[in-house]
Length: 553
Image (cartoon, rainbow, N blue to C red):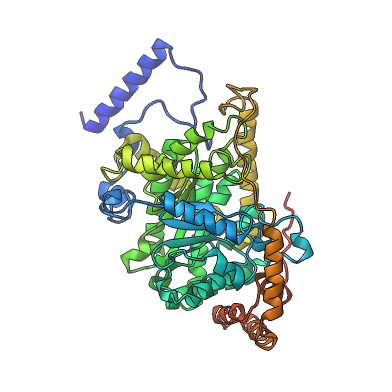
């Protein structure tokens, strides 16, 4: 009898014994995504896997077990807290506090007018100042936001999409005014416009024009900023909209592949830019499903880059990603319980091999994080790093029958989604058909139905409910922040050289109308001449038009 036959016999006998005992709960036994889970996993579940082809050692293709041979023994993940609120002065102080608390990277959150490309003196911005991030309109704002921060010693991430090229230009210009060359700036621009059409809806221009701007940033970074990631392909917001783990992974990787195709169409060699595309994933409550998702992500991306697109440089095969714990999982009820959820989610990200990590604060379902809650979120990562022991060995879950089977199942489900997207003509036609949106909406509805029927227990929400009112300190903004900001914006516009400003915007408009031009040099000239985020984005509104999503039933 072969080992495989012996394993099948033992599994059969085991299942029969369990059924005969009749001691198993009714279930359902499923992941957060609704994936059914077997009672037990053994060698028969991974019999089709080839170790070298599918798993291999850490740092070896296809990187299932991690992109670095030494894992966190060689370099711990970056603790990078997503933060931004109210005025640039308040946010600058929060960044200094986070760095003092142990952060070694910054992640900038912008408010809604900035995200949508409006200055704060425009009617659209009324009542939105600083409510979900920091308000930035001009180079004057960016200089204060970054004041006394060691930009040449830390990495900085900026969560901005439609206005990404102009906000990035403000960052570069502010650093260069301090004498820090752009080539020494390290960080990440989210700049993932495709996921805006799929899930978050913070788009401005039609997809083709938006993709042109993204490709401009990719080309500029490949030539001018070797330490910068010009795109962070984001599954986070896709998952927050209600997608399953497999949908998050499939749609995110499909978007990443689309950016690669546009870069190649621009005439770039894949090894010029593929190594600078990074990813951003959600880490939800189901510990093992999330670990499997991260492992499958590396394997799929490596195979796509090497086998599908012919990348020759091993760096182009590597998937490097940031992770944030699942904001959508946090509850307003019994918010202290969120500390437990976040700890589990953060541990899954670490066990899955993330390169950097943001842990949500316990009060984020109620308001922007207070200073104490943000500090506790940082401490969560530090306890995992220094006290849990999980960094002692690389990929400690590798070889688990359950994890390896989940990883392979995740990969196969993603490849099926790839086929569906290609059958629709690619990512942009699939967006216009409403394919992604409907898949996410259906998954979200299924999850909510499970919560409503109590097939899925959410502690403190539909079980173990308490009538006790939460006693959580709420972050308060400086009431003078908006007044100072608007006064600074008014002064900025009044004191700039009007001739240089007008000439720079005219040059940018000319470059924007020329599909063969890269707009980034002209954007940099414009912001250095005093152009604001709103002025550049309004220029593009005139040149490109605004996108209106079609309602798909």
